[in-house]
Each structure stands twice: as structure tokens, then as C-alpha cells.
Length: 254
Image 1 (spheres, one colour):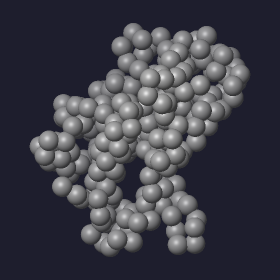
Image 2: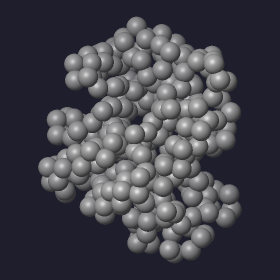
Image 3: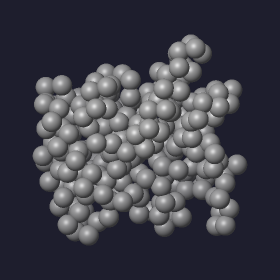
Image 4: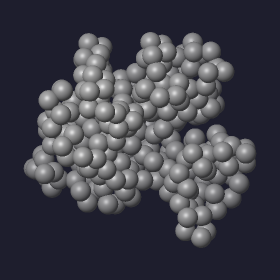
């Protein structure tokens, strides 16, 4: 089953490229899960990030096809990474407009075709405040029942705050990169609170935006295990990431 091409022409599909940015486990010194980041390449070589090209996608009425394409990409990339010996989760971002009944139906159809979702994760970037919280929560519960992991992305900004934490099912909390930009006193207080909260809830925590080696010393002292940021890896093509994976029999990458 292949639904990776948009009906509006191959040009839409060939200009979309997927990059990977891995998460790094400080204790085990290895890459764990990866986040997929979609980019749109213009004919002149300019690369657009989602905040710039997603509005264009939606105005073209291909928003659902785009969502389905990202799901297919996650499944294909997960299979390739598994063949390369990487067993971590492959995460795709979804906002409130993408978390709808059509997306749920598409996931259920893919699941019925004997696709495994055990290594797939959905990062909820921001939910729609115009949609009742219980409707979004119900959708996420049904998605989770398919074996897909759920993470709350960019926690601490926008709508991804306490309301999302209290109402949505999730397996992982990703602290927004703005936390690492706060002054040292606030950063320590916030990170320690998040570590304690996720431990108490038996959830995973990832701190995003880690770029300074000195910050890692503090994060380890505060109990952080998983980080993501330019210090360990910038977004990269699949082949480049596979080249960073450890050789067979070697668990650590550094």
C-alpha cells in the first residue's frame, strides 16, 4: 500500500524532504529516538520550515494528503532504521488541525494492513482551542490504542501547558527549547520540577534546545536523561543518520 504521492501532482511530493534529528541519552551515551522534520524545497533552492509552508499546504486543500504522507514516511523510515539496527521511536509532528477523524481513520486503515506502529510516535505540537479538549483527548486515546506513542511537544509554550498535561494521554514530555534560554535560577527550578513531575507520573522527559556542553553538566546533575539539540545532532538526511549509528556490537557512539 503506497499513499505517499499527492494527487495534486508529483511536484508537491518531490519538493518535500524529511530530515531526522535524534534524541540523545546522557546516561547510555547513545541516540535513542528520532524526530522527523519536514522541509519544503523551492525550485530556487530556498528551504522553507513548516511554519512557512504549512499555511500554503492548507490553502491548497491538500492538508490531509500531507498528513498521510508524513505517516507513510514515518513507517518507511522506521523500517529502514530497524534494518540498520536502530530500534528507537520515529516521531512525527501533528498539530490540532491534523488531529482529526480523517487522520485516525487513515492510521486505522494502515494498522489493519498489518503495519506495526510500535516504533511510531506522534508529537502533539499544539492543539486547537476551538476544539473541545475531550474530543482531542478521545482521538489521542484511540491513536494510542493502535500502539502509537504520544508525546506533548514544546511543553511550556502556546496551548501545550497544564491543560494538555491534565487531559491528554501521553508517554513523553518534551520541554520547549526556551527553557534552556532562561536565566540559570529559573532554568534549574523549571527543569528540576519537570524531572520530578515526569518521574512521579512514570513518563519520559526530553529537554530540547541543548547546545552548550556546560549545560549538560547541570542537566545531568538535575536528573535529566534525554536531550535533543544542535550539540549532539542537527537535522540531517536519513543516510547521514544511519552513518552515525554504532557498528554491530558497539553500544555507545562516543
